[in-house]
Length: 113
Length: 116
Picture 1 (cartoon, each protein chain N blue to C red):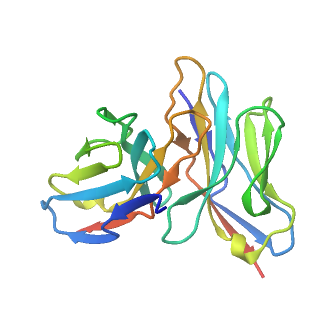
Picture 2 (spheres, each protein chain N blue to C red):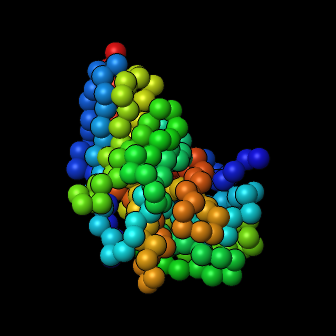
Picture 3 (cartoon, chains in turn red, orange):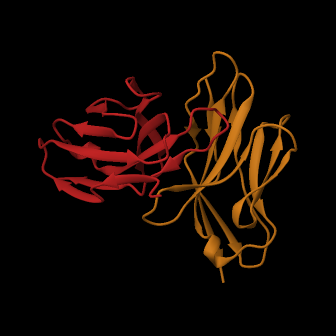
C-alpha cells in the first residue's frame, strides 16, 4: 500500500518550459489536492478536486492547470514555468468526510532557472 | 472565512522537558482541528485530530493536544521532548458547519528544535 505517490521527486526547468507533476493515490480517496510549500509561507492550496470529474481553484492557481484523470490520479501542469514557481509541491488526498486527515505524498522539489 | 495562526516560527526546548506548540483558529461554525508533522524531505504526516468530545486529544508518538473553545486554541503538547521530535509542525482547521469551507486551512508551521 503505497499511499500517495508523486513523480518526479526533483526537477530543474528553464524559464518558459512546461512540465506536468504527477500524483496517484491507491487508497480509493475521493478528494485530492495540490499545495505548494515555500519558506515562511506554510502550505498554500493551488487546486483541488473534491471528486472525480471536478476541479476547483485554490488560493494560488495562477500559472497552473490541473487534470483529474480518474479517481486515482491528479496532475498539475505548469504551462510556462517562471522563477516564482520554484517551490516544493505536495499532493494530498482524503476520504470524503470532514473528520478524516489528509494523506500527503513526499513532494516534488522544483527549481526554475 | 477560516484561518489558523501559529504564533511562533520556532520553539526551542531541552530534551526531557515538556513542549508546547501553539495554534489558534477562527471559524464561523464548528471546527475540525488537525496537527501534522513534517520531517526533512518528507510530506506531512498526521499526528492527531479534534472532532468532538473530550477536549484533550491523544495522538501518535506521545503527543497530545488540548482544545479550548473559549480561547479558540488547539495547542500541541508532549510531557517529555525527544531529540527525534525535532521537525516542522502544522496546525490545520476545517469549518464543518453548513455553508462552511470543507477545504483545510493550514498554519504557517512551527519549527521545533529539541536540544540534547
